[in-house]
Image 1: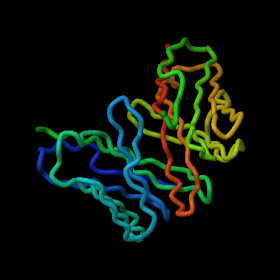
Image 2: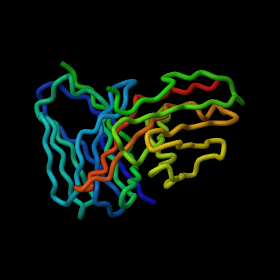
Image 3: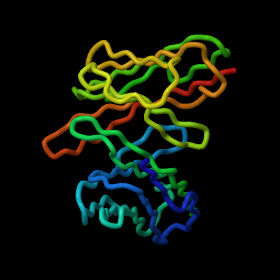
Image 4: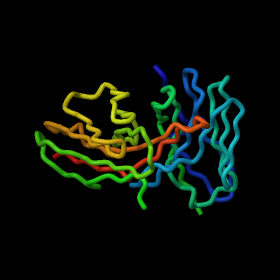
Length: 113
Length: 115
């Protein structure tokens, strides 16, 4: 059974600092997703990573994928308060047209001014 | 221009009742999903439909019955509600593209509270 683990589960950091959220998964997959969820809101897609070595960046967020290590990272650069949210990684266990996302536990990111 | 919409947003009901949640997407996607997010924010897939055909049916009690009248709609009916059904239910949709992205877009969620 596929397990997806994120760490840390909770991260409190100061504005301006850098930090990384880690997503480990237990079996092979070729698609990994990062989502953001604000309190009481829906999930917003951030990144789709499709291959080994894939790196994507949007603003202060950068995601990478190492399929051999079964590890994805979400790096936050010079954090700002607006990035406070819960971040989920999800690994695709489906195939073809239908994907079956197995979500990680989520990382609650609290950025203090 | 809501891409994936759900109704109702909140649902408060008594144990033993039957309730339905509706989902509609206007993205032209061919696959739709139901997820359950529990009080610890853990997200788990329940069902998926591709072109109105049931594709994924996780170990969900028979009291939960999805119905897809067409590609743009996926409803969830729950019979004999129990306390443990209290959660936020998210609908999502995706389209398998040339690049294989299969990115899922989520609705706003329905917060179900069973008393």
